[in-house]
Image (cartoon, rainbow, N blue to C red; front, side, top):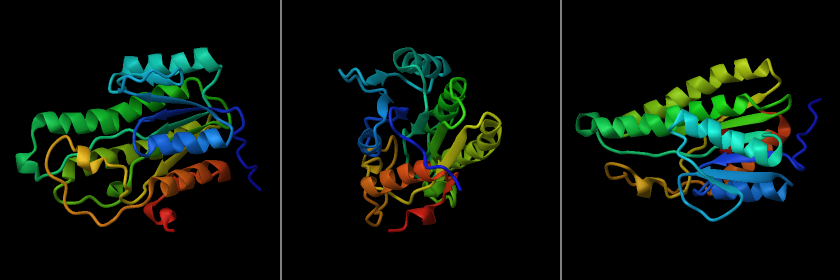
Length: 223
């Protein structure tokens, strides 16, 4: 029987911690007794926030080292950052393609690479690739590809990290009302049906950490 994860005094890092899902994840983890550090590009006057552009490998390395220097460890890392764009590929600019992969894929890889260097047995890495990583959609092809690449990376990372006793969770929640679509870096979002409440998604991810799960497909988020 798997021993439930003990959240008390664990140091948790949330990339995208100032976003619609990141802020809720932070509250849920703090309620469990975690010390939470949020990382984002936003300039926030808060000792528990680090301003960093994780699209840079050096920035990811420095941010994680800063957390360890402050708190002594990194026990949970959740990547909740991301950008989205809409529109057919024949009207999608090179800059948009690069930004989608830099943020959604490269930033994720840099963060996980930096964090893994400091994590010990029992620690947890969480990547949120999203339902689009299960089935890509027209008008979202590059965004979907960047998230599918993230899911593929998480699959291999899970096997590598397991050697050190570190667990990896790939979470693929359905469309969630985080406001991300309204902040698209290009294109106009289609009319999506009502999405999930971010609180529901955050609680399901925290539950997966607690219960020793390693994969959260879209179906795992059913109410």
